[in-house]
Length: 572
Image (cartoon, rainbow, N blue to C red):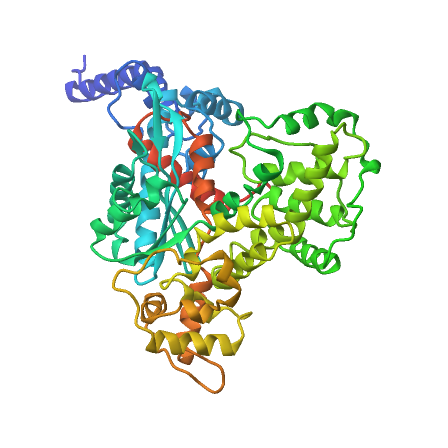
């Protein structure tokens, strides 16, 4: 009998044991592999309180069977990219809704938990906001900027009551940027000034700020407690005052009260009646003014030229179209259904008046109402529309304002002309000693006027602390020229736009050639209307309480949405 080879038997036994262990562990390994390769794994841990932060990216992936547990890993495609996160924010899609979208697109096996979606969106939002701020710092090393702000009362979150959101933005030399939207306990000049300065400081733009654009409310323009005063105290230097020209012209249209009297409530009853009547209106029955208007053909031609330009708001375009129709011209557009008519809406008085005038033969009006409608409409189309539509142009602002004041002083309806003229005379910001220099960059201003202004800048000594608004007597405005407002203080605006040399040349140039080109470009990019800030108000209104209630995340959200809107203005 042969002996047993003990060494060989031991090797065989160990081989069999390894096979048994391998077969028994395969299902467990396959299950583990399936769980770890699924996009749900980290999210499930978070839902159960076991999150350890290991789900850096969640990806779509089909479950891996036990038979393929040891197969090579496939390349995984991330779901939550920065572009996806920004699109979700822009469209105000909540985290829960995003989960449903991911499920529909990638299937249930690739769907992350809501908390995972939330965390990745917060992280992407913060990263993009930091990148936006870094880009801004690099792009504006020496660009002169204007800082804008405009308060908005909103409902506070979580029962906090009414709060004041303050969009703060900057513009200049092709730059338009929202900085932040802080919440204020009240819209006082002190708090507003501090918030505006803090925003400029946080973005490292204090040295770039050369001026402020604001609505002409007392909280902004007060001599002691206005926001403008406090901002200048913080920056420790003088800043140019660019009062919103549209806001000033809104005050000028107060001639409506001269015609129809004051209203006791927020609604204008004549407009309210017109809205109720509108379903009965027949577009074909609209009728232009009966009496011919001086210069009607020129006004119609100007309005047609304006329609070829891109307008920032639809109601601007609508006003121009209605002006053409009222004067007897033709446009390829129907008269629109009346919109909001509360007093807070810009241009409501103008647009409603033009529409009611067109339907004055069908819409029930008293003799007094019909007479006053025609009176106010004539004022709008002959005197008001063109200055309003050119209000955004900074370089023509001095000439436009002076021409408007002269037109109001000479207006044939003395009651309307004097009432509107008094308002305009109190808001001659752009012919002040500081801002009249804008006319040097206006192509429509004749060379002789520019030379006279340059001469005054060199010879007429200005006051130490000149008034922000020029003092113009309505009865004596006809004799005033732009040069009559210029002093040595007017040079400050020109030098703020770049290192320039004021000089008189026979060729008509009033500034050194290279310097003039740079300064003129920057002057033309100055935003002298606060429509820009109004869009900031619209942004916070749309996202008030949406997506997040965390204040820091809210600021990041607004930055991301603004950038996404700039990159993709529409869905086309």
